[in-house]
Length: 115
Image 1 (cartoon, helix red, strand yellow):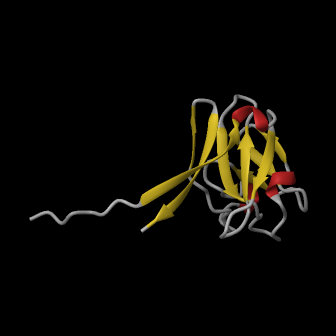
Image 2 (cartoon, one colour):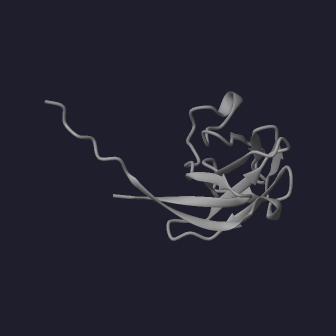
């Protein structure tokens, strides 16, 4: 017999239009578990991370977006937007948790995993 695997339920919240986030920029979204940084890359992709660098807690939403990464404004650590992992020599030294995010009809939906 195969055991049934319970899939987590994701509750989606509309946090604004894609165009509310500038190209190669970010917006901070308050959340109960800590602020989330929503990023828009130059090729118009949307990513979301906890707004806290794994190095010293710098606000990633205030960093410079380059390619599919963001440079922390405090010490210039580059963080991959898809994984939250530091890049280069800092890889493996922590992680900025990734938040579930999707785009529907030009709107950004941020997910909260439940159960």
